[in-house]
Length: 228
Image 1 (tube, rainbow, N blue to C red):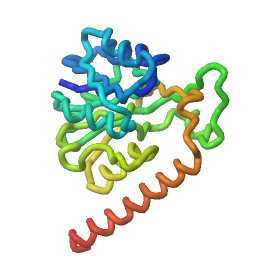
Image 2 (image 1 turned 135 degrees about the vertical axis):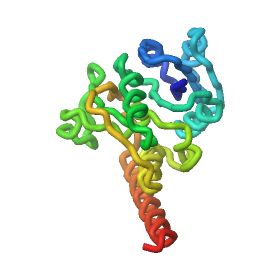
Image 3 (image 1 turned 180 degrees about the horizontal axis):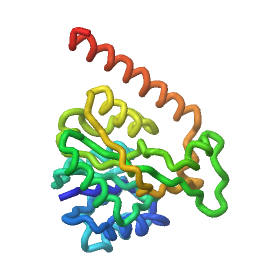
Image 4 (image 1 turned 90 degrees about the vertical axis):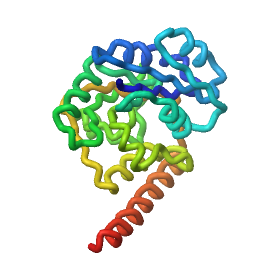
């Protein structure tokens, strides 16, 4: 079984599309867990309207804590994440699980992603448009499928990061030497809209700098412990 974890906070506008794109996956068996992070809109009601979905509700603690709450109740041997404003190609899980089956040495696999703008939204100044035009490999949770043992080895998402917890997770996986793969298909469609552009650039930059510094400390420690 693959457990799909969908964290949501005030995502009523797009949540149904995200859930339906998970339900439309041709890969089975599938478990879908929506973690409502204290939404004040209709997100919780929308999630509960799907009989195929398990719903976890918590007070607002941030995306990292919501993802970790999903991990705490997962039953699948592999885990996938889907942000409430993103959608998947129907073949996403089938393609990535097939790849993991063919490469048992890998701990996780990501796919390529296509970023698109919500109508009426301008391209954010802090995103490199040329990079995303080429449908890059998605080092974001919505592009990820990981085996359960990876989370047991490196843990979940660090709640001390407001914006950089997903980047921190990928850095931790790399620093721990966990082998990964990339499938060439575009299987994730990532939405850019006014709400997910509202993060303060200074805060984002501060988080990313802390992620990099933490990674350097870990790598130095790993080298020392390995006698290199």
